Length: 197
Image 1: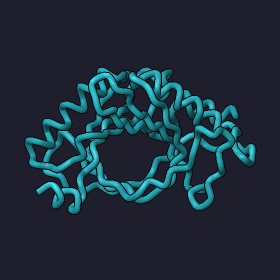
Image 2: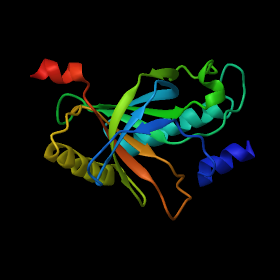
Image 3: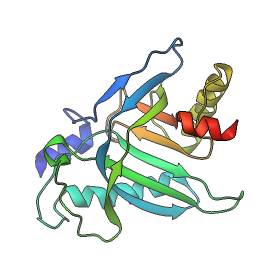
Image 4: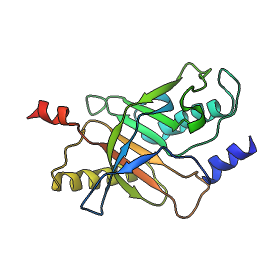
C-alpha cells in the first residue's frame, strides 16, 4: 500500500499507456495514436469539472487499493484522464468519466471492481490532438488550454470531435514543480469527416 500511496502522491515511476507520435508540422500541439487498451473508469454527473474528478478519483483509488473482486492492490498509473461530455444546454449537467489506465500485467484480464459505479472500459484505438501545459490545473485553466488547442487545430484545418474532450493529469497535488497536464481533442476518423461533407 505504501508504494501505491507514494506513487499517487509523488507521481514517480508510473506506468503509462503506449502511444505513437503522428507526424505533425507544428509545435503548439502533439498528435498521438493510442492503441486499444483497457481502463478502469467511473462516471460522475454534475456541473463542475474539479469536484467530479475528485469524486471519480477517489472511487478509482479505492479500486486499486483493493476494493475489487480479488481484494488485490493494483499499481497506480498515469495519466488520470477525464472525458468531458457536456449536456445539451447551457445549464445542463455534464457527464465526467474519470479513468485510470490498467497496468500491462492486468490488461488481458482486469480485476473486476466491487463498486457498482466503477467499470472496466475497453477504449478503442484513438488518435488525439494534445496540448501540454504545466503548473497546477483546474477547470478554468483546462478550458483556456482547450480553446488554444481548438484554435490551433482550426488554423491547421484539422478535423476533431467538437462535443467532447479529455483532460489528462500526470501528477499528484503534492508535486510542486515540473507538473504535466494535458487537454485532448479526438481526431475525427475518415468516416466521421465523410458524413459531414
